[in-house]
Image (cartoon, rainbow over all chains, first blue to last red; front, side, top):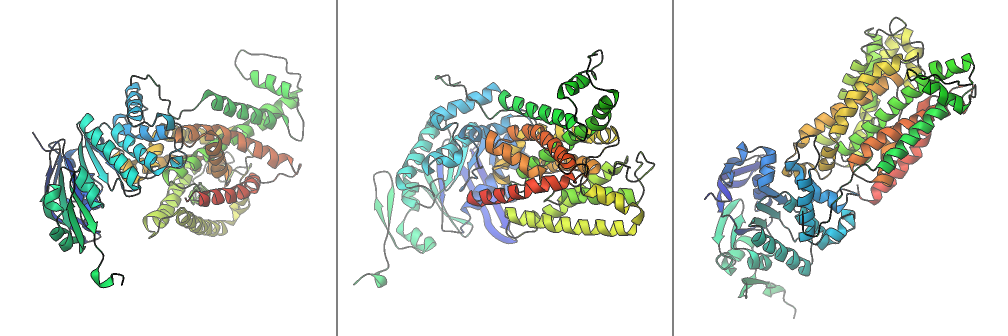
Length: 263
Length: 362
């Protein structure tokens, strides 16, 4: 069986500068892989390349189909993306926003079918958004809004979900709520999740596998316990951390510089 | 469908709003036909209109000259007002969606100035075959045969320059950058137009009168000239109203949803510019319609372009027909250019939109 995502020798240049240097990565169907790395490592660029939003060399295949041979609409049926800061169209109701997720199924110049409306209805119920359906998206709280972003992605009916920093704007309670929901959906709907995240402890608790990216190279890949080590984090983040063995994965505790400790 | 059986209802044009739009058009038509230097009984006007339907013959109670005023003088002018108003409002709503910019409007984007230059150039080089044997017609409209095509070319040049300067070439992309670019492009194109006019003094007076914007007509000539372009533009824009909603999440997200944003944008710009060109070719430069009408619709009827665009056409048509009524009656017998009336209403409205846009962080 083909991997859900298969990346070979991926290279990306932006503004003439090399960002990704020949990455190889395979994500199995049903797997949750989280990409971590310091700022500027190329995490978002990797996700954008998979989503077809930046030019690249090398090959990226989704469920066995190279993306450069996929029509835009077909790619959108395989792959749904929640960007880091999704645009919130002023005045747009949650229902209409989620309905945008059905775009790959609506022929050009056409309108939604009953099946499209049913798919959206299903997603709104699943994500407990029915009561917000008529509310403008911008009036929702951060956690509710993140659920609406997820709902639009789910309405695409894709089995592969790309999440770019899905919890960066949320407090810790809402971070857990959103990631628990993604994990439930992954099991319910046999989704494959490829995420980029900054919070290492939370990332390690949910991912099956982690990929550490630094300066455009994959420098470590494996289980959270293999990747979230004091040595690797110190080497690539320049961070002083203590790694504690937690119930669901390693917990990362930042340690203040001893030179600047209070007297 | 989920087990709970909820039926989701997306943003759609409701019958209530369609009826309101149609009612506004009917009121504008009746007022436009009944009110003027010669006041005519509105019931007689209705009867006269019904008599235009083949096979209908109702006693109107109007004298022969009154009937002629209604059907031969005022009706073409009202029809032209409806057509131009619908086009300008539709184009404004479309540009606002395409550029994701609440301030976009054919006038402010340099599109109308481009169309004006194109039309002026057509008159100056003599390609028009107006009903008076070339050039600007006696009514002051530049309604020669090829003038709309020249106006369309000018409109596309105008919007391409504005887009290139304000979006593609700008380091910081904000709604204001685009508008600043539009103002600069409009000034530049207007300067060229002035130069062309100075070089062709024999047409200067007629073209100037047309540029100020007016709906004075010579029978049905202007309406029949602009109508085919307007129909094509309206069908092309309305067919893509769902795409405009998708574009509202930005190009990257629209692309992730399977849309080709750049292709949709170009098609929509071409269609809206064609509508603008058709309007400008027969009525001159009439500002602010494209900003007042779609914004009011957005405030009261919802933010989906599936609602905004058709309603903008209806209410834009009514708005311009009523503005024209004001233009020809407020200082009667002197007629004010209609562009002055719409600017008088539009300028304060524009300030209001700017304040609102700033508040919501656009």
